[in-house]
Length: 185
Image (cartoon, rainbow, N blue to C red; front, side, top):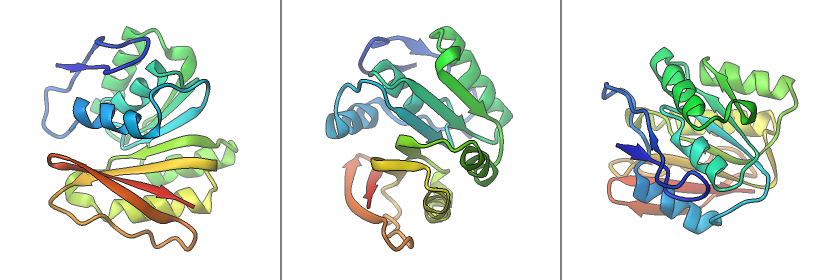
């Protein structure tokens, strides 16, 4: 069962898919990430790309972020995210883009949206999507100054070095089979 690890919704159970095509970020990884970036925030906006169940964006809202935007092209994922948002009564603090990630990032750019935290978790077999996503984040200037970009991938794959001139992989943290790269300017 999937549940929030900290904040105002700590221990709340969420809907999970009945399919293996969606892989929620494990609780130990979510807790570890917030231990690194700070347990609780006052305000802030998170963009959850390849969102799956929406667990990262919902975890961030539980820990004090004011808004969470989710992008996932899967109808199943968008449905689960919507159900979880309803379960936590967070509709007024969220947006869901059921669209291919590059088109979603383009639309966010047109709306001049900026984020304090961007989390991307492409399918583990498509680690190459990390660089193409980072390139679009940079192109559209979606991360705020001093913002954080995190990219999750399998420990079976090496962390991709950013191809974006000013964006560097600052560090990586490993939790079992999951690695999260911390990117910054």
